[in-house]
Image 1 (cartoon, one colour):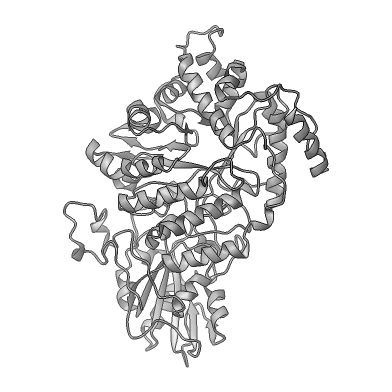
Image 2: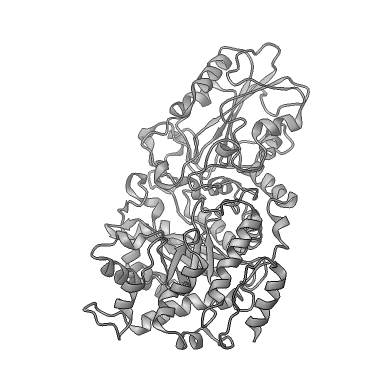
Length: 600
């Protein structure tokens, strides 16, 4: 049989005792429906659960007949190397292939700006920066490169792109949104889907895309993560549902509901939006995966929560640490003695067939394993060149006076600021770990290193304490990395993000006659009116990722700035929330309007 032959070949290929069992299952069924009809209830239930890969073993994979594993944010092998990722993938996949039916597992990952959990991978600008490029072709190319680096470690399912239309900068996930404008999100989100999935999921470098988080995660009151979007259906559709239409038309194969609520009802239990609107009206026929334990936020008992989410339209439960076998058996198996109301067989079949269809489309039954032939592509020079292009196109120059920019190689340049040589802050959250980190978290080029690459007339002085003989200065400041709820805030004042050294440096620069540029790393527009007013030039660099050379390209004029604000830039907290789609939007009242950005 085909699968036995594959396993035997892999025994020789990996030559490390990786595959201890061969698959004695019958030939692969021709269709997902045929395979479903061969399955027992334990096998069905195994397909409906997605567990965390670092807590599962080959033994538990076989015990629970698992259908899917995910690597959550920061869930890397003990040795975070591409080879270690690949080895762990193959070992766990082999366990699934050794079960009765030999159904391969889906492996999912949050590769939201490159394959960002893997040390050494190419890290691209977060979506807020890509929104400033307005370049759909570039976004598609970035998604394709991300898919290549994801497939290199064996994984084939990406929990991206995020189609949130962020309406309030206080939300900690604002940087995961391309724009406050639904049209921009629609165009770039669809481009990302095309890039991830390619022309066919069976292609070697295609991954399953997941459009998320349906719906209105970016429209919650006060920008509260997992909060309530209090709005009428017209606003819901015109602003938040709108980007999903293009993404579905682009062929998105999976979708993730939002943790948040619409008018008080949690999305994971909203059968009107998940079934009537999404499936029946918009025509989405792909796989719906829950967010991390999101079913537990629904009302009632655990049985109630599972039933309500499943009936509403959720196909697979991301339940990382608690296998829902007994509960699902009570709800689905007619032979189980229980008082629980049973779920219709038709709905069970629909969910499992949706899952199996993806596996067939990805050609996993014929090619469940991955060799190491593509590991060299992770963080490759070619991929980093595209990331560098994305950085320079994403930067938005908000101010440039006194001929401050571009810099020249003949000038004496001082670099200051706590973020100038901080790669982790440059990359932001969802980088190596869930919340991100500071310092040398991965491989890349900081702003300071990039400026040194351009010119030999550069010195670093954190506090700008000695400006004698200095012609130009650059100070790099910004937010400390965060993700999701940890990033929610009621205070976006940049001053509160400055270190003591940053404040001293700005004070010294303001007291001098040296023209200086502020480079801001942030996941959103900040209240930075004083810093902008006092500086000679100001660049919103967002969270650009590993390729700091792209910033130097802008600073030295090798590329003339083209980035345009994808979010309105407010002057004070009193103006938040402010969005260009508001009926009363008076762009002149705010510091910089949507679409603003100057060039040389």
